[in-house]
Length: 151
Image (cartoon, rainbow, N blue to C red; front, side, top):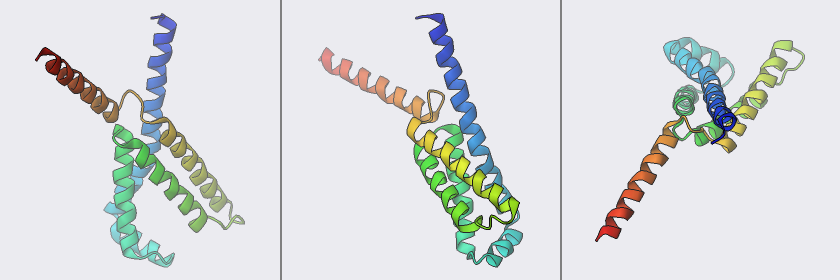
Protein backbone atom coordinates (compact mmCIF):
# COMPACT_ATOMS: atom_id res chain seq x y z
CA UNK A 1 0.00 0.00 0.00
CA UNK A 2 1.19 3.51 -0.77
CA UNK A 3 2.88 5.09 2.28
CA UNK A 4 1.05 8.39 1.68
CA UNK A 5 -2.28 6.56 1.69
CA UNK A 6 -1.39 4.76 4.95
CA UNK A 7 -0.37 8.05 6.56
CA UNK A 8 -3.57 9.72 5.41
CA UNK A 9 -5.73 6.93 6.84
CA UNK A 10 -3.84 6.95 10.14
CA UNK A 11 -4.18 10.74 10.39
CA UNK A 12 -7.88 10.45 9.51
CA UNK A 13 -8.37 8.07 12.44
CA UNK A 14 -6.47 10.35 14.83
CA UNK A 15 -8.55 13.38 13.83
CA UNK A 16 -11.82 11.43 14.12
CA UNK A 17 -10.86 10.18 17.59
CA UNK A 18 -9.82 13.67 18.69
CA UNK A 19 -13.09 15.11 17.35
CA UNK A 20 -15.12 12.49 19.23
CA UNK A 21 -13.26 13.21 22.46
CA UNK A 22 -13.68 16.98 22.08
CA UNK A 23 -17.40 16.65 21.38
CA UNK A 24 -17.90 14.20 24.24
CA UNK A 25 -15.92 16.24 26.79
CA UNK A 26 -18.47 19.05 27.18
CA UNK A 27 -21.29 16.60 27.92
CA UNK A 28 -19.36 14.36 30.31
CA UNK A 29 -17.99 17.40 32.14
CA UNK A 30 -21.40 19.08 32.37
CA UNK A 31 -23.15 15.85 33.41
CA UNK A 32 -20.64 15.33 36.22
CA UNK A 33 -20.88 18.97 37.26
CA UNK A 34 -24.68 18.82 37.43
CA UNK A 35 -24.59 15.54 39.37
CA UNK A 36 -22.02 16.82 41.88
CA UNK A 37 -23.95 20.07 42.39
CA UNK A 38 -27.42 18.59 42.12
CA UNK A 39 -29.16 20.82 44.67
CA UNK A 40 -27.89 24.06 43.12
CA UNK A 41 -28.59 22.76 39.60
CA UNK A 42 -32.10 21.73 40.64
CA UNK A 43 -32.81 25.23 42.00
CA UNK A 44 -31.49 26.86 38.82
CA UNK A 45 -33.55 24.55 36.63
CA UNK A 46 -36.67 25.13 38.73
CA UNK A 47 -36.33 28.88 38.07
CA UNK A 48 -36.51 28.06 34.36
CA UNK A 49 -39.57 25.86 34.91
CA UNK A 50 -37.71 22.57 34.44
CA UNK A 51 -38.89 19.79 36.80
CA UNK A 52 -36.37 17.77 38.85
CA UNK A 53 -36.95 14.56 36.87
CA UNK A 54 -35.83 16.38 33.71
CA UNK A 55 -32.56 17.29 35.45
CA UNK A 56 -31.98 13.64 36.33
CA UNK A 57 -32.73 12.64 32.73
CA UNK A 58 -30.39 15.37 31.45
CA UNK A 59 -27.55 14.16 33.66
CA UNK A 60 -28.09 10.55 32.58
CA UNK A 61 -28.27 11.53 28.91
CA UNK A 62 -25.15 13.69 29.02
CA UNK A 63 -23.10 11.06 30.83
CA UNK A 64 -24.30 8.00 28.92
CA UNK A 65 -24.21 9.53 25.44
CA UNK A 66 -21.02 11.48 26.14
CA UNK A 67 -19.16 8.38 27.30
CA UNK A 68 -20.58 6.35 24.41
CA UNK A 69 -19.23 8.92 21.95
CA UNK A 70 -15.84 9.10 23.70
CA UNK A 71 -15.25 5.35 23.55
CA UNK A 72 -17.05 4.86 20.25
CA UNK A 73 -19.74 2.46 21.46
CA UNK A 74 -23.08 3.18 19.77
CA UNK A 75 -21.56 6.58 19.03
CA UNK A 76 -23.92 7.28 16.14
CA UNK A 77 -26.96 6.89 18.38
CA UNK A 78 -25.32 8.97 21.11
CA UNK A 79 -24.45 11.68 18.57
CA UNK A 80 -28.00 11.74 17.19
CA UNK A 81 -29.53 12.10 20.64
CA UNK A 82 -27.07 14.78 21.77
CA UNK A 83 -27.50 16.64 18.48
CA UNK A 84 -31.26 16.80 19.08
CA UNK A 85 -30.61 17.73 22.72
CA UNK A 86 -28.47 20.68 21.59
CA UNK A 87 -31.15 21.85 19.15
CA UNK A 88 -33.75 21.65 21.92
CA UNK A 89 -31.50 23.48 24.38
CA UNK A 90 -30.79 26.23 21.87
CA UNK A 91 -34.42 26.80 20.95
CA UNK A 92 -35.88 26.43 24.46
CA UNK A 93 -33.34 28.29 26.59
CA UNK A 94 -31.21 30.58 24.43
CA UNK A 95 -33.51 32.73 22.30
CA UNK A 96 -33.14 36.13 23.96
CA UNK A 97 -30.76 37.43 21.30
CA UNK A 98 -30.73 40.94 22.81
CA UNK A 99 -28.39 39.44 25.42
CA UNK A 100 -25.15 38.72 23.57
CA UNK A 101 -24.29 35.76 25.84
CA UNK A 102 -27.60 34.10 24.96
CA UNK A 103 -26.88 34.52 21.25
CA UNK A 104 -23.44 32.96 21.75
CA UNK A 105 -24.95 30.00 23.63
CA UNK A 106 -27.55 29.58 20.89
CA UNK A 107 -24.85 29.55 18.21
CA UNK A 108 -22.61 27.23 20.26
CA UNK A 109 -25.46 24.76 20.69
CA UNK A 110 -26.17 24.84 16.95
CA UNK A 111 -22.49 24.29 16.15
CA UNK A 112 -22.25 21.34 18.55
CA UNK A 113 -25.45 19.89 17.07
CA UNK A 114 -23.86 20.17 13.62
CA UNK A 115 -20.77 18.31 14.79
CA UNK A 116 -22.95 15.63 16.36
CA UNK A 117 -24.92 15.15 13.16
CA UNK A 118 -21.69 14.78 11.17
CA UNK A 119 -20.53 12.15 13.69
CA UNK A 120 -23.92 10.46 13.45
CA UNK A 121 -23.54 10.10 9.68
CA UNK A 122 -19.80 9.34 9.64
CA UNK A 123 -19.62 6.94 12.57
CA UNK A 124 -17.00 6.55 15.28
CA UNK A 125 -14.21 5.35 13.00
CA UNK A 126 -11.57 2.68 13.29
CA UNK A 127 -10.40 3.59 16.80
CA UNK A 128 -13.63 2.74 18.60
CA UNK A 129 -15.29 -0.02 20.57
CA UNK A 130 -17.80 -0.46 17.73
CA UNK A 131 -14.95 -1.09 15.27
CA UNK A 132 -13.35 -3.63 17.61
CA UNK A 133 -16.67 -5.44 18.06
CA UNK A 134 -17.27 -5.51 14.28
CA UNK A 135 -13.80 -6.97 13.73
CA UNK A 136 -14.39 -9.60 16.40
CA UNK A 137 -17.76 -10.57 14.89
CA UNK A 138 -16.18 -10.81 11.45
CA UNK A 139 -13.35 -12.99 12.79
CA UNK A 140 -15.77 -15.21 14.71
CA UNK A 141 -18.02 -15.55 11.66
CA UNK A 142 -15.03 -16.45 9.45
CA UNK A 143 -13.84 -19.04 11.97
CA UNK A 144 -17.32 -20.56 12.16
CA UNK A 145 -17.59 -20.66 8.38
CA UNK A 146 -14.19 -22.39 8.11
CA UNK A 147 -15.11 -24.96 10.77
CA UNK A 148 -18.31 -25.70 8.82
CA UNK A 149 -16.25 -26.27 5.63
CA UNK A 150 -13.98 -28.74 7.41
CA UNK A 151 -16.86 -31.09 8.14
